[in-house]
Every structure is written in structure tokens, then in C-alpha cells.
Image (cartoon, rainbow, N blue to C red; front, side):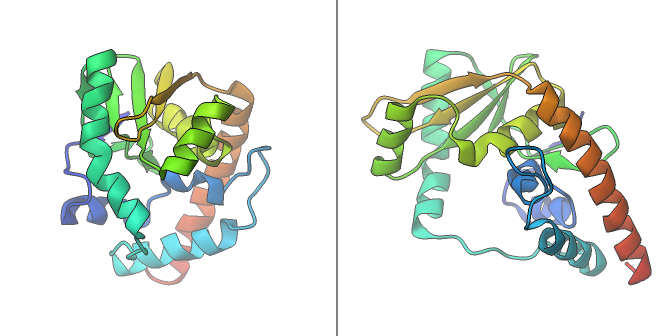
Length: 198
């Protein structure tokens, strides 16, 4: 794993992410069952375009998403009170530099952290259902795959409410499927970029 010491959401961070398949979007490459996603082609073209123009395309950010960003530091501090100190990093690249992830933190030598700050209703749902919400399976497993870490803590946080924290370990079967799909995806991405002169 290669760590780029960039401030998340800074111009330099967006520049580094341009055209880079990222764990937060691995669900656009692979489904929960390890099959190619229906969003794959559109995501492939988006990243090819970013590589060609050298700029990460701006994405819509809802009020809820903005609120989540604002609460992230508070949530990370709460996690540190309960467990361990968290190392903030900008971007982690796989050793081949072809894909990466932007963790909410690395924990010790073996762990990582993904923080979500959803609405109260969604947070209560996560608490009642337990486990890792399926919406974040590919992101968390992708972060484990990119970094080679042994575990990843998923945390749902809402102020003045019990936190939902679940430790996730690598799903070897999914990682095997992800390795194959990422290799194919990155090969196609390179071919398209070269064809269009990027």
C-alpha cells in the first residue's frame, strides 16, 4: 500500500483521484454477489474521461452528505475515546497504483475505519439490524483489499445516540472476484484512455 499524504477534499486530493477506481465506487464495478455491476460501463467511461481531461468530475452533494462530512471529525474523536487513535490519511493506493481508497482513518498496524453519519432514522435502522449495512459492503471490503489490512471498523454515528460499530474482516471469496474484475476494468480503462489520446 502507498499512502498519499493529502488533505481529503483538497484540490490536490481531487487531482490524485481523477480517473482512479476507488473503493467507495467499487459497487459500480462489482455487485454483492461478485458479479459485474450494471453501472460498470458508465463508471468506466466517467473515469476514462477524467483521465483524459485530468480533472475529477464534480458530484452532487446533498444536505445529508454535507452534514455527514461535518460530523466526521466528531465521530472519529468518539471512536478514539472508545478504542484507539486514528491516523488520518488522504489516499491509499494499491501497490500497482491502479486503484485506491480514501479511508476515514487507519487504526494501528492492522485496522482501518469507515465512518458514516446518516439520518437518525437510518442510524436506528443500522442499530436494529446489526452487522455491516449491505450498501457499504463493497466499499469496506474494497478498502481491506486495497490496503491489505486485517480488519476494518464500520461506524455509524449520530450525536447523543448509541454508535453502531462493527468489525469487518476480509471476505476472501469476494476479494478473489474483485481482483479479477479490477484487473479487467483497469485494462479496459487504459485501452480507452490510450485510444482517445489521454
